[in-house]
Image (cartoon, rainbow, N blue to C red; front, side, top):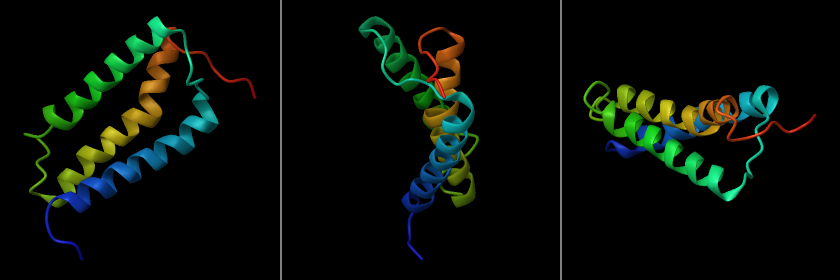
Length: 99
């Protein structure tokens, strides 16, 4: 429907983020807030890994092939909403919300 390489990337990111959010809110339940030092580490680590996924996997999953671009950005969305919070809890940078 929409020409170009951007729509599959946007849809991939939104799909990954949606799935990650649903799973995170049910299983991980990470608190977003943290002391400033831990928050800075979370931001740096989160952005570095997201950059690695989006740029680093560009050669393996190029956006010119729409499905591969979709997958690459879906992985980025899953990192942001599910995997990063799980890693932050494992590294004691975040706490879990109580039920």
